[in-house]
Length: 192
Length: 192
Image (cartoon, rainbow over all chains, first blue to last red; front, side):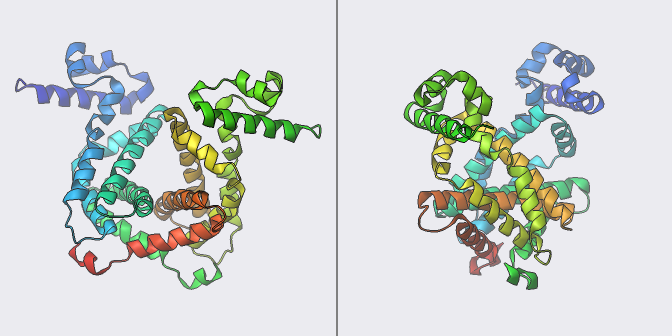
């Protein structure tokens, strides 16, 4: 690849995010994105299939990357601990400077939310399969994977609100600890 | 409504489920459903918007019903315990004789899986809002709601495999206890 290509990709992405935030995702065309970036439609097509892809291209690899991280985690770790370690590792990849912007754009569009749900379903499946590979039973893997994704999403929200205050892996550990505390039967739980 | 209507609705639903299971959801038409049920298209339209609606009509009310159950739960219960109580209550409504069939059909079709994800997203939002109403912080509510749905789905799988062996509310409690045990740092977790 020519050396200028990564720059073109970043310019297109930055232009798209600015336009989506300013005018709403539905109101922005690929032509407007390329015009703002000072690049051609052909260059756009080299990096992205369509304008939606600008938001999701970076998460295409997420299922495989997360599964690999689960597989690499210390073999002595219990499934839940291995999952948190892997989520923290992968989280560092997605927690870039534009993460909060992408999220705001996705939340503003039902079409994008649906695409996001499909993405999270694929990540959840890959995570469950990786936990089974580590020896978790199918029932445990199927239970833990969506819980891990819930922890990740909640931690991501907390992190992106104040990205300087803590790292995403720290927020993941903090969120998991909060969940564990909520699951413990407290005094009130005797009613249940 | 005339007294015979619920029977017509059940006949249409039973015919649809049989045909979906036998031939695959994508290969079944509304005409085949009405023919098998011995009823007209007009009668079909009185109960269902389309063939997909046969599978999801009963869960349309789920977000509101679940939110109401959370609101009704003993005010002394902590959010997580209130959520489990509500899920058990609502679970009894959806755990009917056809639940496992519906699930098998949905899992066989990407279109239906997508519709299912949209449904679960709506249920999750309603659950989070209801937990906030009970005084949970927004961050805690947003964390607990998807975990509750993950528990429910896992418990539902376990229940539907052997519906006579335990009630769905029992499976929900059992699954929640298993999750809590998995979240506890064991000996291996000291590596984390």
